[in-house]
Image 1 (cartoon, rainbow, N blue to C red):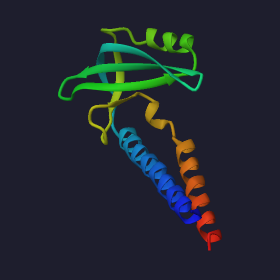
Image 2 (cartoon, rainbow, N blue to C red; image 1 turned 30 degrees about the vertical axis):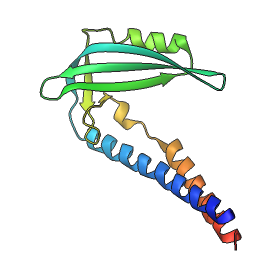
Image 3 (cartoon, rainbow, N blue to C red; image 1 turned 45 degrees about the vertical axis):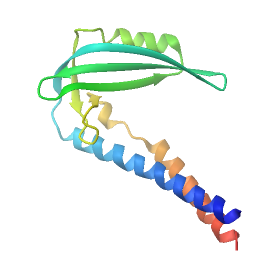
Image 4 (cartoon, rainbow, N blue to C red; image 1 turned 60 degrees about the horizontal axis):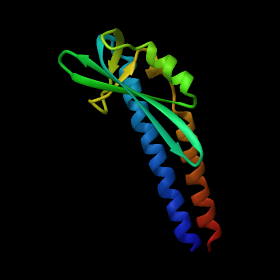
Length: 139
């Protein structure tokens, strides 16, 4: 059973690190590209509840000529923070974005490509390391 748990942790850690690498690649490519002006066409708000915790999600859809609709999503811990953020992006307003080279239906807001997902990388490394440790001690 420990060997199966070890394998599960190795796979989970690998998946986290692959997701991090994919996101990092898209952000690095976006850093080298100039930001372009796009118009907000849709603002969707959603609430997600899980284990007594509520998260508010804002989904923006930008229209960029030559790319079609591009989306950008943000999740917030408080409704006030989400509402304040959504008010900064009213329908019809223009904002600077950078198309995502990995997921062609998404975009980064200008400056967002500089954010790192180090927490995802750290979690992946911890799961992977735990899988190795458990695998070594399973024998």
